[in-house]
Length: 219
Image (cartoon, rainbow, N blue to C red):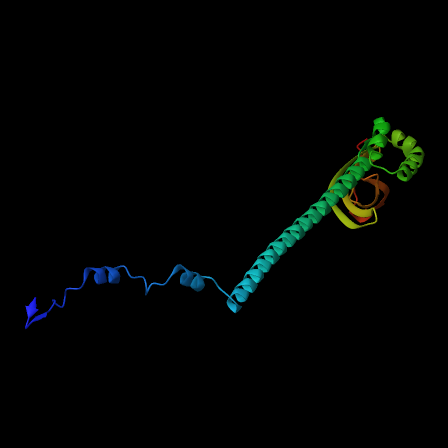
């Protein structure tokens, strides 16, 4: 538009080239190099981040090792407890079998009794028992002696260096030509571990005669 000999453009009109320049300008956004400088740590910042990463990694490794150690210790403790329980069960079984066999007999079959008593015996106990048996075998036969032993309880004592002690409470009912009587002795059993197995090495009984109950046999 021409006004007073001058050409005046409307305020809103701009040259197409200038408008296009303004619209497509990236001057305020920044270049790719500027962006790289912003997101990539340098200098002290890079060193701080590196140290933090190393400490984080060390911490994770330490926690993993601690968890592994605790797991191994826990397994070892459970294994020890299981082994101790297995040993106690073996001692109870061998002691109970030996005392029950020793107190259960029949004058009509003393050989079977002898074999049962010596099932889990050491060589020393076998010699001791056989020597003692020869002394009272004839008396048992002459009096028609029978015995029945019932285990009432078993206690396991100290175990060390392949040697153990147990105490067995047994009720014995003895029948003979003279009558029937009952005893409740505490029997101490000494065991030795031979070739990986517990064996009876000695047996000692303590009798409380005050609790003895006897009844004569009817004529």
